[in-house]
Length: 82
Length: 482
Image 1 (tube, rainbow over the protein chains, first blue to last red):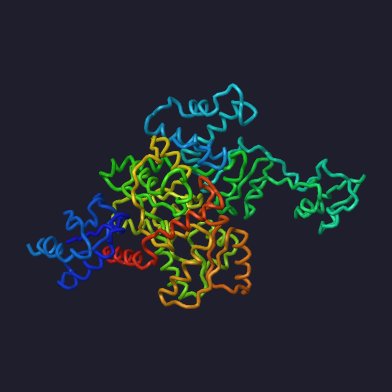
Image 2 (image 1 turned 180 degrees about the horizontal axis):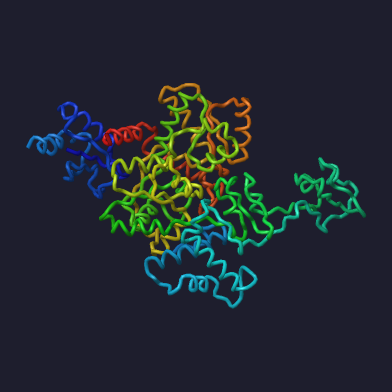
């Protein structure tokens, strides 16, 4: 699966790099290194609801350092296991 | 539309802008029946000539300007060309004693002349052309300012002596010497030396994207942009660029962060390094100090680095660079840039593009712009990289970097000469062809001492104070490519 984190200006100011670091950690902790390809993307056109993510082209809104784990467990992992 | 007087420094820039605007508008609206007949009449309506001897010559010159706006002479690899009929054949008399010479008795001119080229004949100073080396000392020594140096502005502006006067008295550019810095473009008072425009290519790329449906078009903007569109906020300019059909605006400064990272590593290996971000400087080294070419950094320029990063995240995307620089128009077509950049526009062309599309930037909403670090953003000024490399090296645990900022070609020549003869005390050389750096680039809308203040402010406003996160992004993009 491809997990994209927006690094456009708007999301950058809201903390894209924190989200990237969190996602890296979660991927490692759940042993998903071979299954999730973490990428960056310049602007997903969803600036009002950043930080934006795309999990296999499904748009996820309002990511931040604190809710990364929840998003990962509820929105990302099930897509792989399901 | 903003007042043009506020936007441009010179009437020559305004003229180039008028032609570009008409040509761009026509590409979208097909408003002219015949570009080469209608546009010259619009710009020079007559009946009285305002710039040249007659309206017919004015119109003929506008026709030549249209050709350059459409891409110029494809068989000439130089991005700067002379419009022969626009060249006014300025005098080339050299040192000239005007009638203001009072025939005084101190003869400071004669005393100061190192070549004994001045004689006093009938109480007047007379210059012996066979001895005169045109050093200009007499012009400064005369208390009456009676001696002048008649040098063509194009020749005087060219620091690499690439411009000579041809047999027909027209200016001629020697492509073997020219470093495409564009100094002559800005300095010619008749607008006879002009940079080629690739704006038609940019329009084609934008149109063929079908509003971003087929592929995304990214604008990479040079950091010097913050000192340019003074009638609006940079955030509004970003909105304006997006309205032209660009998907996203990315700072070249983000690429500059990555370039700094590479240069610090490369310096560690080589011990002596020059920068490579200014293509005119690189050409200057290759043409004048070939033995020092090995010291030129192999890092690609910030423009190219930013574009490569974008294309790793979006392989189908296209990238158009917008900057103050004429030699970037040559750099993006060099093999070493691997096609990362699809087209280059100048700030002058961006202004014409916005106005041709009736986009009033000052009335637009603001779109945030913040990708790069403080260091990446101050690349635009002379001394910016030198300042950055010292701090970045320290961050990376690299010790011993002694940077020198070479501001303009004259300083580059002096410092490289010292390096050549092992007399240099520094080991990291920042080279910029334009005096003051990119913020004083030839294709800037305006040039002035205050522009450096704008660049410093823009740097200070960056969220990222170190290049750490930019480098992480770079590495992430490399990982995902694998």
